[in-house]
Amino acid sequence: MTGHVRRTLVLLVLTPLLYALAVAPQAASAHTELVSASPKDGAELTKAPDHLTLTFDEPVDLADVRVLTMDGNRLPVSRTAGGGKDSVRVALAAPAGGELAVVWSVVDEEDGHASSGRLTFGVGAATTATMTGGDEAASPVPAPSPSVRKGLVAARWAGYLALALFVGGLAFVTLLWPRGAHEPRARALLVLAWTVGLLATVAALGLQGAYTALGGLRDALRPATYADVLATEPGAVLASRGLLWVLAAVVLGALMQGGAGTSHSPGWRVGALAVAFGLLRTTGMAGHNSEGSEPTWGAIADFVHLLGASLWIGGLAMLTVAVLPRRRAGELAAVVPGYSRLAALSVTGIVAAGLVLAWQVVGSYDALLHSSYGHLLLIKTAVLAAVLLAAYASRQWVRTRLDLAVLLRGDAASVRPFGYSVAVETGLVLVVLVVTSLLVTADPGR
Image (tube, rainbow, N blue to C red; front, top):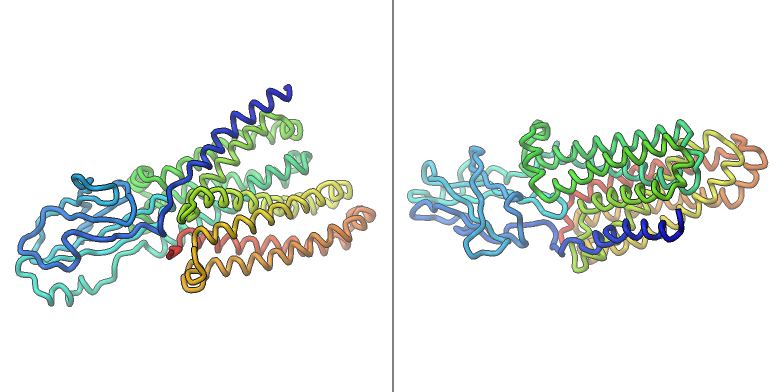
């Protein structure tokens, strides 16, 4: 294949990918919230209204808005006549007795976060005591089930880990260790990452549907839940990610069959690049990167952040699981310095992109110090600092002890300190991923 043809193929792939990065979502202010309702919450009405108008702080999709009666019946939602995309019209049924109460919920189009609340009105003979002192009014505002939220955090943690292992592992084998395509441990790690990634995406679809519908874990298994969530933007993003994991099976299968020869093939590299880009981009679209004054920069920074983390974590896992146990002097001399340079470049990208994302999402020192999102971000930063200390120890070993380890033909005693620092680095990275999963479901509170 000539150089001109190769450049043309790369251009054909990169053009739509760069376009996808450029058309990032419009800016948003934290999660979607209710601004006003007509009639107002707590109003005493002479007769029951036939509709309710809800206005939110940003445009909403009709599929993302749910309004239920207190007995669980879903009410029809439509656009208000002459209104904007930030308001909806809810058809109401005649109340039973002197009180009308509904529960509303709305899904943020960018990250799938669900906001909810209750509206109560007195009708006709309703009294102030009924409005303020009844058991129903005193009950807590409905919110997503804690078990569903924990399940969603777990699915996202598994998804982040699988993404890092798959994308970073492929890059490690392709760029640094082509022989690894034939190594059973490396192949097993890539297959495990692909399996977990696909299963985590499918589980996240059901859990996202149950989360936005304020349901329980059982709702995450119902076909109707999947149908409802696929009609929303977060559901469509998750479905796209699932399809990309299916395509990733083709890329992985070709590598495992062809080995090192396939990893050098321009056609395979273009396909792997496209799949990796899609997985990284669809994962980033579930975060808070578009919430701020510069959503395009937020999307680019998030992509760089995820790419750097994947190259670092995936390469670290491949080094730990597949390369070090072999203790082959030639491989250590060829692979470890290359990964050390790649990890240093990845960490630089992670830190730089992280600063941009912190500025984009948090927005102020006050929000950083006095919001739960800011506290989680500080925890993530502290754990990341510990990871960097372990990474520094590994890099020092590469600079000062690698030559000795090669001369001793990978002697266990000479390689052991490096293995310890890599193991600590790997364990702390898993903690970072847990905090990252919690950040996705937390409200930035800008």
